[in-house]
Length: 481
Image (tube, rainbow, N blue to C red; front, side, top):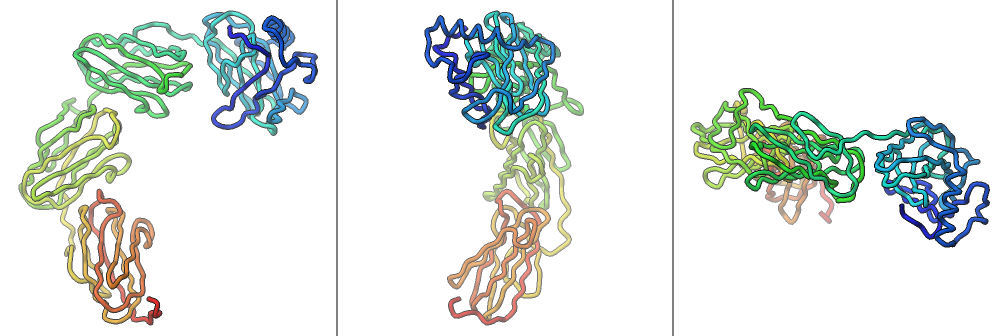
């Protein structure tokens, strides 16, 4: 066990907040006043004093709940005014002990070795014991105002030390700082999902296999857990289980499960996508390309949906046509809805960022043309509303002001987040959500002259139908305008 030059408790803050943990404070032995506690002593004296301190403490027994209460009479942490209580516990080498704090008390539990060196502290502590002996458990209030009853539950955690994992047979194991290598044998080629989950540290999973195959993941399973889902050929693989930053300690679960395919189980990672077509694909880090042939000009909607990845679409076509989208279909799904002229287009399906992998559905459907006249340019007329179609590029309109007027412009759409701008005669103004929701509204006093109105989406990735209206009311404008 670690040896110390004094039996000072030096406890650290948890989660960035002070937890009342006796920082830089000398803890007296039982029956000894604070001012009687030695500040410096030889190592042999330290060992004897620490051992005596443990002998004099109330005992905590594994698997037996211990109940107590922090009150104003409990021992004081002079650093922050919190109160604490100490207990002795006997632990065996290679045991994984779990200590959890329950009850009304807002606080933490800490584990020390027989030389009063801090091993771990948290509301739930899990620690592998390196040497049999007596240890100290400290229950502390979170701050000077933390009082109340508590229960300390303790148990040994039964974990597997196996260095292999089988499909469909999860294992619970322990990570103590260093990474662990675990062997996985795949007998049948297919789609598999590997997960590493832990409540104690940020899980990180790596896999290496035949023919240079290698993948790694940090947080794809959510809540700092790791997930790798991919096609695996038959063969022997090495899984490396570690923490994201290399210093994690605690329990983790490692599992390998077959990943079922929807429908007929067919995956198409290239080829043609046609109107009224839907296909399943698998993204594993590399962008996938599909060919789209548009025979008849019209309005089409292409969607990429996935519960595994953040979908992203890019559509390129004749005469420099280019559109891309991230989340227009809601959640993390992508959608491009636009007028497409006849011709050949290239559709790229990928993830918005990162190297996560997973299944997605890609579909293309014709959409009914809006039952309205569309005007994507021209002159605005007061008292009238026009409809236009936005597809990533700003649309410009002319506004003629014949006499000084209070001008009100509104742009509304159920398809995208609108944005409106007006400029001219040395004047410029813009608005995003002034009409409420994601609709735009500008109301400005304007001098006579010609102005340019730009109607667009807040994001270049949006598209859809919009309504643009103009109202003008003659008004006196202050000379400074």
